[in-house]
Length: 380
Image (tube, helix red, strand yellow):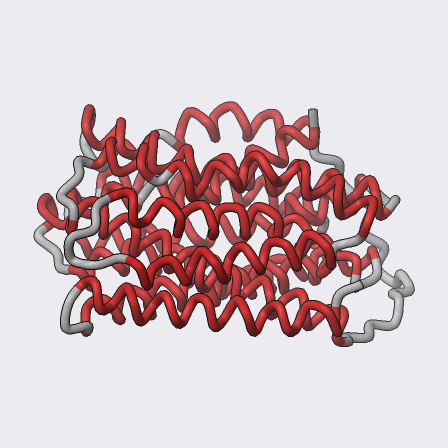
């Protein structure tokens, strides 16, 4: 039950990455903002999240992860309410930044508690697979739920939907998350940072740079280039996000049995192919042209996520679980936020939407190829 509760934490954090994307056109119209304002609604959350993950991960190692999990749920709930009632784009962006602070408290805490619960490496790999699968489940849920909420109730509902979830999760967390005893003078294992830790974190960052950047681009392609309604666009993004939810637990079991290198190699190969399919989109293309892009990246991230998280966590001693989680999640979220900005700016400055997609196809395939080259010498 505790593992299920921790999965709710990652679900909420990931939900607010993608549920917002389908609401961006409605936000633009209602609050009178530009493409830059739309991007900031996404990146303010991700920058605050990425910038504080390491600090809060280390804080959890010092004061106990129960406290940071509870604080994260509380801050996230208050900020979600503020987002839902924001009257201007400036206040919405500010509230999204505070929401990112809550997520930064919550994310490393949930993963560190899992590390504390499962001392055995294989059991931990399976648990991380379930945890990452729950987070991935939020990704297809985001476009679907967001599309339905925007169509029926307006864009503000995509933030207010967090409140009943937190109302249930907070008292359960208060009861179930254990308070680890923190020794003031405990002896810590000597910390040595090597390639086995650096490599997986670099790969995790490159994965999110391409994955989250592509998710934004595909949302804009469906809603603004093809003029699809929000809910239909959410449905049409399922091939990107559903493989992540399905493959998370499967990848956890593969990692437990064979180690992280095999699923990471498979995932990166799929990612290269998926990005390359952007080169086939032209001015006459419709939805079918981006389905192979979604499948390639969805399968790639599905095989990669649990394996790369496990590789990074396993590279440091157990008493540094918060630090390891903080570094890994900082790498994923910070570089992912950079990816959203770079992909959006590339489209905004390209001569045409399609020519921008072609540039991003080369960029994504190249970066995932680099990640594949890093995998073999650094990951066992």
